[in-house]
Image (tube, rainbow, N blue to C red):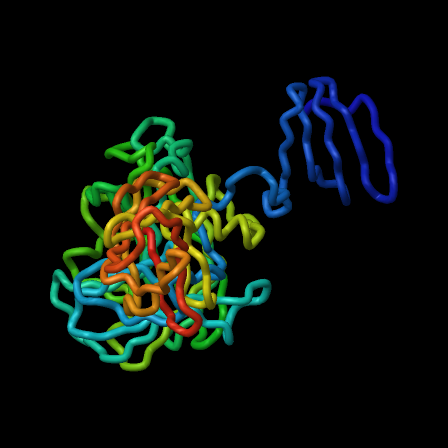
Length: 394
């Protein structure tokens, strides 16, 4: 170690500069911060790193605060179903399960959790059966990890978890082609108790990993995964895996629950403090993949348009640029939507997407009797829970 050439002490903090040009700030005789000649700053305890170093957490909505689609869901059969924003569930078992945004039980520092509940158990999974909760991360947000190259970076996954069951649980990280997987395990020691876990994973130097707007990394928490999609924990495999061999099956126990919050995936070998982002920022990040209008706001106006013979066209400017041109759908009855041409209040008989781009969409509403050439307003009525939905999920 280079010798100290200058030192000063203030309130128990020692500052030294050594002959190599490194400035050290020490507390209780231990270096806490070092600044080298290029002005690079190193924190000895990475848990003390400020929360302002860019997009530290690659997980979006890790605190489970955004829920545009709703707060309670029943998993579909053999399909990927989105629940809380950016979080989806895949269920292909003989059991039945639900996912909910839980606001009654959560770890300290949070206000929500994602809660999985087994409502019909499947205690004997076939080899190809599985259920897992997942977030799919866009390649643009993981490109700097350089996975698939010799420079692949190490990452750490950390989260708070709670379950009615105890034992060794499993999960996995996967690529977008689902042919490279890293199964991991974590242990829940006490039932119905929040425990914080972290898993450090050396980056994959093999395989193909997206660096664009397609699926970069899938983070999966296995909640009952058959042998075809489970593998040895702690190593990369050329397989489609969502859990570790022998992990606890939550779907196998009736009324069993599993909850998670504070999920963070970050570069480096150490879990650091959770990256709290402003609510508006988190919502905008979610809206890149899904956005919903209506549902809860009476007379919410969607846009201004123009009437043509028996239909009206409305242009909607989306609040954020979406990942890709979205898929349009609506929920609820058409009778809950209103087109007003300045004279008549009409309910459309159909709504279709006319033109879709990353941030603008054109909707065409069939409305018999509308006055061609008139300006129109398109909105929802006072009582219906209808919505317009735009999805560009991975």
